[in-house]
Length: 388
Image 1 (tube, rainbow, N blue to C red):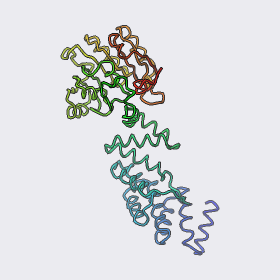
Image 2 (spheres, rainbow, N blue to C red):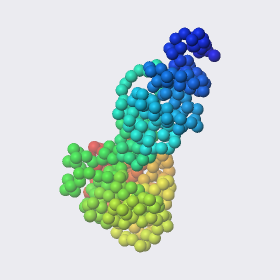
Image 3 (cartoon, rainbow, N blue to C red):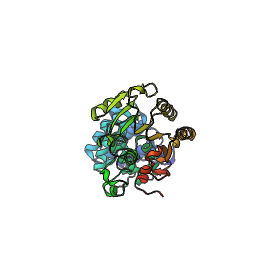
Image 4 (cartoon, helix red, strand yellow):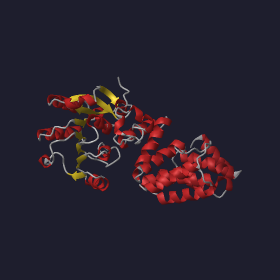
């Protein structure tokens, strides 16, 4: 037992100003992992008016660290919020609900903490119970309850404003995607878009692929989309469909196609693109998207399509070089070049970091519409003519 702890115990034994030393003693026990003793003294402190909130909060933290007593922890924290509607209790509630996988209550608790957030010093600090810590809790919970765009927006705020959580936020953004509006065409930059006659004021693709295709082909065309994903969010063909394009979208996941056919006019098919019978669709495809996992599968699908006699005028091919290395990127470039395609935008990025994930290809007959070459560039920057 260290000297500080011995001193507090001695003061309690003398029963001299007992209330003044209960919390410090409990905290000392907590810091050395003696949670049972700490809880006993924290709960004794609950009986004193000035220490009630702290006693309930710290006892709950001890139970949380012990594990296996989540219902008790929740009861203590809820009691604490009735004594003092402060940040720490709401934050700890969100942590308990996170551990339980109760994401809605986790989300609500984080929101409650943000609603009452104030900056203050505490002699018994709770790690993470601050504004950015609450944002992390809210962002994670938002993702799990279906508030995907809000989750992205919160993670992007953390990435830009929090030193502590910057790396965590960046890893999550790479996984769940950036907010829809981050690198999209906006009303204030529409005038910079190549072809104003297209009357585009909003796009939907992750890296402006839809704008590139419209620029190369125009308002009317046909597409084959391999790897449909979400029918609208970060979708390369939704804008094309709005402009009257016809097309077919394939995805191996039933839930994607079920949602796709609920929201889209053009057909979605649940099928493995490697075994799909391409003889059942038209040959005259203007745009081909090939985006599957992993990149070697994407490349195999590309070859199957080409070997079936389909020769799209525009191809966006996802090689994920920033994750998978150079192998598939190099193989696909050799292959498409041998078929007469021109690599128009090499190593398109989806953020301003090293995120080179895709190549954009065209046939010579449409090069007049997209004459510039660029590489290692954010998609929207290429579209808005920010490259040389």
